[in-house]
Length: 215
Length: 218
Image (cartoon, rainbow over all chains, first blue to last red):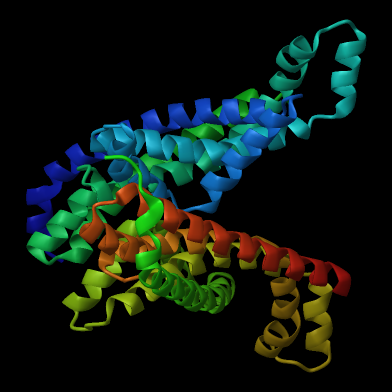
């Protein structure tokens, strides 16, 4: 193993890791927003909204994220959407992650006992109040852990933007593999940084999960 | 530049060929990931400590890093140690091993969930530990684990798009090549997405049928 080379190039990997972190955070925020909107649509009283929500989930979970990214980044200009690679990465991956998060959030909400909603409605709360004050606080506790799994997948999916030349960890590894012919060393450098990011986030999620449990 | 789908039929044969490659790679990698998943699960549960611990470390790393990065490692790593495989073979190995790790997690849980009495009974009847595992415990574990493995295989189909990056002419790279000639990215990527979606629906249909058969056999 060529440790000398690794020591020489690791600062570039650190910079790239910072880009991966930024991508992950922005994508996660957008994903949560899309997930919340998707969940609202899927649980709506209007059949057309339910259809839109279901179609969103089905299409974005049913096609490769890489293709979605390519449609947005390369195909976007044809329909008047001009984005730089980083923006396209965040938006493409965020909308994709939102589809998975929709299923997570909806699953948690519909698993709350029906009696809770009925009781809240009987007590005179409006539909919205019942959701906001009774159902959601309970469902939120159930969401933390599965959303953590979504988040883990999301962080790894940020590697896809290497294919549209965003200089993040995987792209950097790819470039140095090409120029140094040391695939194992470069994999190790990028891999360690990914593992650190994912482990820290994983610990954060378990901490939050413990924190929100009642017992 | 507006949209013009009228040029699509002219390139349909290339797209269909790409589809065939995507299907072939997905099936081959799925088989590898299934067999590999069983082997990995047995190693992770029953191998001696000295093998088991480093093995778990490797599994942990493969679950914590992106598939695309692993594909680069396998494709270029094999070349470095003198094994010059065609890109599609490297792609199948990369996809297969990646999903074997995920399948192994599922199979380990399922093996541990098989009633202990099954192993004890098999041993009492004179089967060796290996025989008991192979003929009694693992078949039951595999049955329990088929529905979640089905989800992994659908994820594998979508992730097979990544092997385009190492130069395998499957559906995604076929679309890319056509776009190189026609400068029509929107039309052809949407077309590729539509084909993935259809294959995906087909796989979900097969999965539902298999699940129904399993629930009947219980």
